[in-house]
Length: 100
Image (cartoon, rainbow, N blue to C red):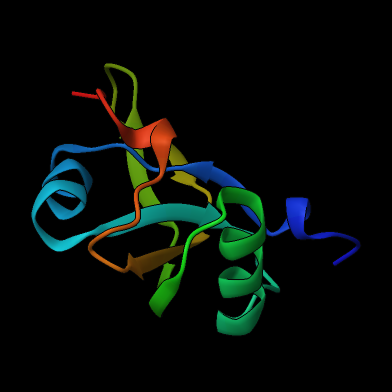
């Protein structure tokens, strides 16, 4: 990793992650493959100026599917790594506010 900005790729916004933000104070990010808990914690604390309580890492596997009418063409979705970051109840990340 060259900088903290390379650790966090993008926020993951789904119905489940919106529930986690409002009720549990947990935020979900897609992170770099070689990122670990301490790197994610440092990146979130420095970029968003919040206090991180806990970081959970999830390795999402690649999924195979079929495409087209004949169902013979196989495609795969890439595997990725995501992090669930729990913050103090007083802290908020503004990019998740107002997203529905």
